[in-house]
Image (cartoon, rainbow, N blue to C red; front, side):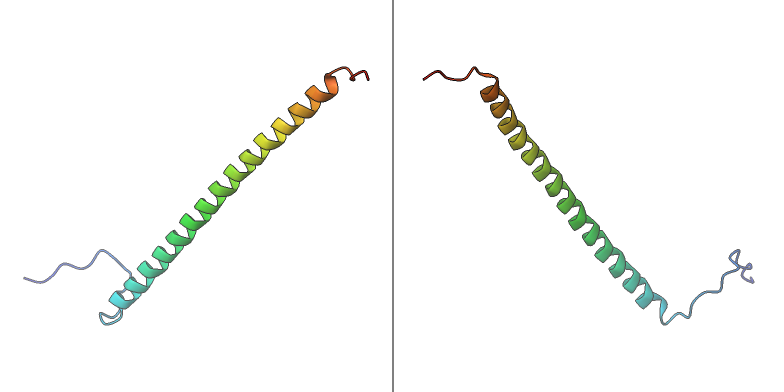
Length: 75
């Protein structure tokens, strides 16, 4: 029985190199995923560091405001 025509109009790549190209593409994808994950970790760390600095600055500012709000000490 004859095989029905393919529905795809795109020609297939030669059978010898398709597998190597697939592995290369998979390797590039994995490298991009690792890079993205490292960037995400770095961004998260920077955000937490920023929040920590804001807490420290807020505490220092409140202490300064409270100190300035007190009446001057009499000597």
